[in-house]
Image 1 (cartoon, rainbow, N blue to C red):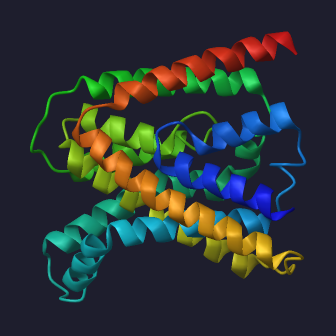
Image 2: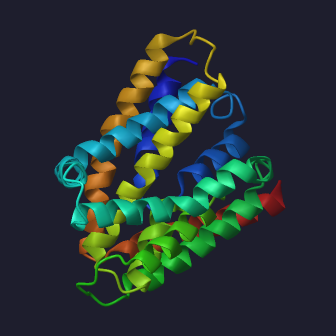
Length: 264
């Protein structure tokens, strides 16, 4: 993999991880259109590096929130920070269970089925459209909300369903304040990404050394920088109720993907 490919992949990962357009769906579409060498040929290590970069960008954007949560936890009291952390854990359960017990079945959906991805993008578009029309509230995420949002995150493991789009839309449709919904959506994925990295390290899947450290570095940098921009931008868009723009985008791309699937 040359440095240009690494930069392109890093930017795609950084932007689509936070914008509600489905990073997995866009990468699968890229494989179908460009061939496997550009996207699917990336190593497992490179994929993990990109995900670590976007997780790190989330921590940077929400550094004050993370610090307050950690301080609250170390007080060992039943405070707001402890309750928020418990809600994060609850939201992780559905995706963690599917990742542990249905990993092979899930991988079957990542075979370049363009029509399936197009259909999932249409579902994402519908979710974003209705979330954009939701009324503003002051409601925080409850424990029941956390589990339902977690189910949305698990469903978003399918290519074409946007993780951020599904979780933020579900939160808003449940009546949660839009700003709190975006904050919860972005923070809830960090433990899952770090857990996935830890699992791969412990299982020995990442034993192979990279043959191109420069590609790793530029890919990480591109994903980190674009992730910072996308995360910050997405928070503003949610506050301003402009998710409909992404709904239109997902609708158009979804229809094109379905038509492309019939054509090829």
